[in-house]
Length: 462
Image (cartoon, rainbow, N blue to C red):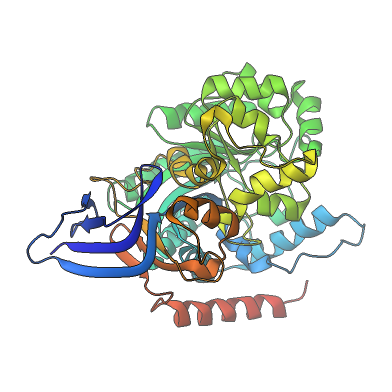
């Protein structure tokens, strides 16, 4: 039988409305939204004191990096703080068994659910065994992550990463042994993944992810992009994250990464560039014309010292945005949303730099990037509450200390700029209840198993 949810307020068409119910069918889809819904036999779930919003869509995640939260906050022996972080990440990547990867991914996904995230794009680049040899099934680890998302209940787009080299004229890096595949191996693995998972679960989809211009050649990017475009799949890439990456690309190709992609006509509306911090006005124009999305990950970008994107220029040009939790330094997509503007305020020494662009209020803009923006980037049919779409939503407790007292007209801005994770009360994905009244029946098991993995890895010699 269907379920009728009755929140005190429901976010619909850009505003919070009262007296509105949301009816969800047995298949997890929204059947109806309105004031006078009372189908016979429906289970009614009262949500007094709560506001309902569409679920957040996390456009960029590396779940295994949840293991290195707080662990990489030190300099390496050569004083290079970024390489100290990267080497810590490599150690975590090189030691996980498939079962442990599953446990770590579940931990990251559960934490996402508790923050209102109902869908995720997992940028997955662990493919091989710890010694670099192939598994019998080259997608074994991809499937472990997919199974983890299904266990927790998140909608997932598995963005399988292509990674064929350490960089231009660089020898293979032992820390990347589990990442490498030739272009032929990668395409074959994608074909096999498509055959194995396509259509078997409506909450699972996939896309391609040439890691970066550093990790794959531009010819490989072209071949992978053509393969994806012929199948209507999303294409995600790391791009222009750090200035050293730009310098290396210019040495190899004579162009910066974004300019190179534009020259090769590889920027499309199906393409998402993760980070895209260090871009010029000319490159912004290229992205805008192509309809290419930027997935910004401010929490990770500040942790790594990557820099601050000129988001006001990109937004003014009409470039679509989404947000990602990336390295899991802090899983809170609304924090990433507010930081897109906050970091720019520090850089420009002015406030509200993203407000009023194209007539859109800043809270609506940022919340849109965290919902429909992420859904577009991942090719998902979610991100808003609408009949026929999946029932992906979360509620906030209107009495939570971080948002208490906000009127309906002020509530979205208060949630975007002021809410803490404690405000999230219920989370539903595809009609499945993941979190109810801030509780999940999976918490104890997932945390226990994750803790065992983290303790085992921390006991190993560096």
